[in-house]
Length: 373
Image (cartoon, rainbow, N blue to C red; front, side, top):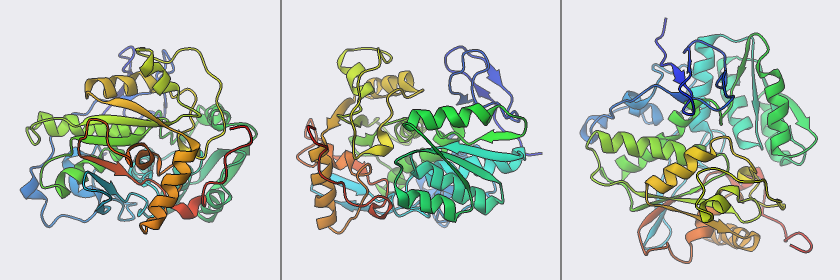
């Protein structure tokens, strides 16, 4: 039987068995972390390894993948003298979510559930559907009404059952959680399940390798539920603890101004979210999360790195999407958020890398601003 690291609750320390289908802390209901502190391999030992994120085997909580689609190892290209972009939209399902989805599918294979359920605004659901198809696991994906038709088409094409929920992204999550505790159900939550974060952290391990054993001064990362940023923080900690980097990059977290609960908490100097504030429509649907469950962890990770929060307007998102397209890169409107935040210069005049997270074909060009917006 494959050994799996146990989970624990970062809020109260409650431990959860590695082979349990429990998806949250049984005491407080919060998201779980993984009891796993790996040591990355040195740079010279990576030569000749498989050309996917599985080349960083020492840092991954699962071994010998059965469902890999060759995910990872995306290109790094220069946008300006000070900013490079990592093209994570060049993944099997055209978004960075493949990094975490492959870990969840691998975990589900080992736990042998009756079925898999997930909730998503589109990209995570597509990735979970694809890797469940690869693993021959029955899958249901809950999405909010208004999700991009192209994303729905992708999910359906992979053979997943689609449940379109009236309401917003949070409504879709509630619907999925209503069935998550049923016997034999594996909740493939990219927010609550820590295996997902140990997939997204490979984004930074790839950067470190591609930059010859160093990291940029700043990592600019879009934040809704924070899975890419928290994964990045995990990788930075692993590389630093192993002595493979001499300094930690600052994490700059980007939110759409229309839905920016974390940026607001940051401005107030708070350690967690305050009262819910009104939200507005945004082209950055993938990061339009009013109450991210890992808010406290996200705020702490940005603070500990010496980073900051940045917000972008709808006009900035539209302009950045078209600007990237004029450079040959067609990226969806959520995926351009980091570039929108720093295309006129990185605060502090520091070198940075931005992720381009999802392909433009998934949702098309952002439309005009809503009336009155």
